[in-house]
Amino acid sequence: MRSIESRIKSIEQRNRKVEYDKAWELSYFRRFLLALFTYLAIGFYLRAANIGRPWLNAIVPSAAFMLSTLTLPFFRSLWLKYINK
Image (cartoon, rainbow, N blue to C red; front, side, top):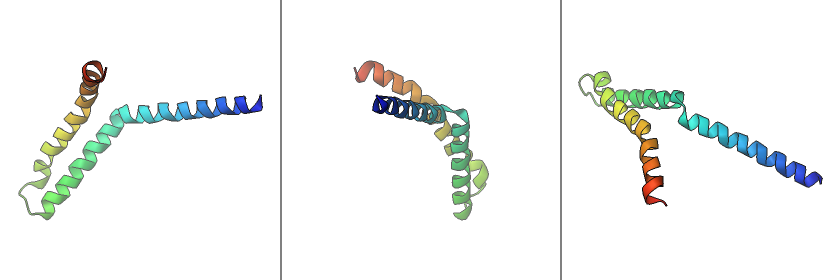
């Protein structure tokens, strides 16, 4: 009987961890951080490469990355609905 209780607790802990991971993956804070770090990385790269106005030019790829992360759930639902039946 003890092993069943420990197995149930183990499953419940795993489920909580999965729920937290999913919440993090879907959070806008995570997406904001990804966009910020992308912007900074591209800005520093463009600055090191002596590209004119690196911080302004870094906006486009960062915005594109953010757009892709926001639209992926939509395309995933389409894929699940029509392709992966």
